[in-house]
Amino acid sequence: MATTPAQAAEHARFDALVAEAAAVCVDGWDFSWLDGRATEQRPSWGYARAMADRMGRARAALDIQTGGGEVLASVPKLPPLTVATESWPPNIARATALLHPLGAAVVADADEPPLPFGDNAFDLVVSRHPVTTWWAEIARVLTPGGTYFSQQVGPASVFELVEYFLGPQPPGTRGARDPEKARAEAEAAGLEVVDLRMEKLRTEFFDIGAVVYFLRKVIWMVPGFTVEEYRPKLAALHHRIETEGPFVAHTTRFLIEARKTEARKPE
Image (tube, rainbow, N blue to C red; front, side, top):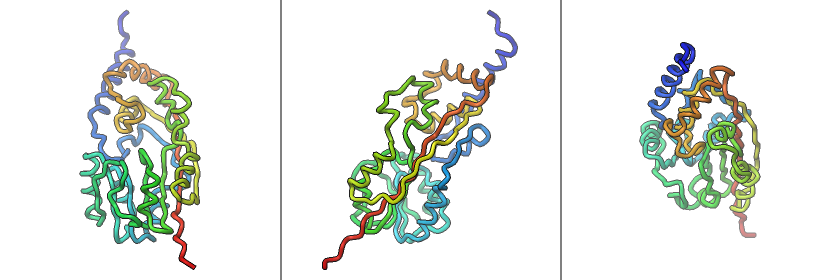
């Protein structure tokens, strides 16, 4: 069957969008490339602003899994001692270049226990979207009375997109990253959870290039994602977006704040 001019134009647009998204750099944690191509509703609590407020009152702070350092660099006033950890070499270089001029040190860390710091080293520990939260280590490096403040990915986040490519996921996978599990783990490590909130947020992808970029950058969504392996599904999704409008998914985020209880003085 001959290809119509409309089909040829759609195929050409698909190839151009995919090629563009496959070539762009995905280092760091800056999603500005998606401006105008995808939208994500933001949580009501304003993590970066709330984190900056806490940073302004801290003496020594640690940002775990800082990515490219973009969120930490947005803080107007860093504590006198500010340290960030990161494991991925391209992000380590990016964060170092961004944060060193601001007076923050970047430490290469494998994101596995133990954290490379002594006990009671920081009165504030923060982390935005950590892959794993090592609660016992966070409790160890916090000073008595110190605070852990984190925005994390919640359960089944953007799973409309995940399940489009991978098919239905088992309940254990869909239920992972439950905020109540985070509460239990924090309390088991000796921390008092003083705030815990979750929101479900609308996310839209306006073209297939945005999907490709997102899956290349957020690599745990569709593990091992490549354009070559998923080209037929990408082409079908491109047609769907072109004919029906944006692909809609839902992001889940939760905010958790936990405090290390003050050591009791002997009576």
